[in-house]
Length: 329
Ligand code: ADP
Ligand code: MG
Image (tube, rainbow, N blue to C red; front, side, top):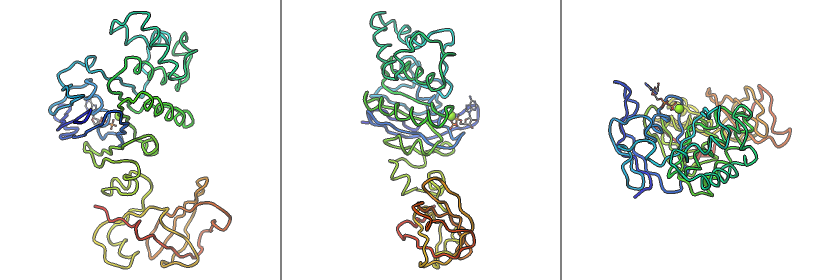
């Protein structure tokens, strides 16, 4: 049996259903990312697991215990939110010790555990500071330490990096992942950022409008999206309707087709003639907008030399790797 097992979970706010049948199995020590657009139900699902909102049906089993009837503090779950939610009038040390005080852990033991948790997030020397004396990234590390110190059975992270700037976000990503692996902590991480999901996760659970669309490792989601939503949400697929796809590939196609921009090659010789419309330079990649047989396509090319730079209007020929042409629902 799985470590965490969510079965037939149903949740509505008033008369509005948010999800009606969520099923998901998570293994011990797994880092699972819930990925999906804003409003699809990610936070609601986490809040149901944490017990911060009531469920209307279904089961949440953690190590075989049904969590649904348990109060939040009895579930053994740590949670970190996008907003830091630190107590402003308490020091870092007091903030982190808070959960242990609630659990009536003896002072000496508590002091030791707090200092261990602060070391883990590299804030050992910040114990006496107040939240207003910390940066956003540091506040979020305090929030993480505050969850870790209670030794949760399950860690839930709801967009913990979304309010931080890009550089700090990348650093914290790595820190969270390495702590999670060191502790073997079963973790559900919520994000709407596909790159974050692709680099951090053992497994990605892709959600849309209250449904789990696809679940798998980063490579599977990237290379084998189950439908047009999955293709559109991860990476930058060219998504063609059946008519455009037939026109481009010169054969009858009855479904939509998804083609990754990096699976198309631009050369002097190729099977499909077209011309460059425009380009943008994305660092080491050049992204072209190309027109071929009346269809507009994105093509990504590695920016290796000046020979890779083509100007607007130039006639080119495209080669599309057959294995990269995916028919999607
Ligand atoms: P996400 O975290 O994926 O952005 P949420 O779980 O926050 O999505 O929200 C899912 C849906 O539930 C949204 O349509 C949102 O408006 C609605 N919702 C969230 N919280 C409440 C609430 N407390 N009362 C009523 N509707 C809510
Ligand atoms: Mg949310």
